[in-house]
Length: 97
Image (cartoon, rainbow, N blue to C red; front, side):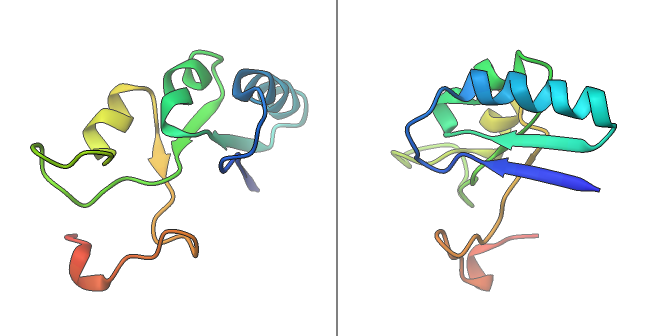
């Protein structure tokens, strides 16, 4: 089983949620990941819980203000990302796989 806790943009302490998720994962053996806002990726990853980005932008390095690069998310500790969430739709042409 895999549980992904998507914190979206709700007001909460992402580190507290991540620490609780890590404890539950350790106690139950269930794989649990937490997806904080981009600014919280590093702090959540530092708790030891599996960390995912809420979204990454299909752009190259350069002038893309507000974008989250996959490389930057990974460098902050993200092991995965949500893609094409209903709140962040992507056109197939925008996804270069």
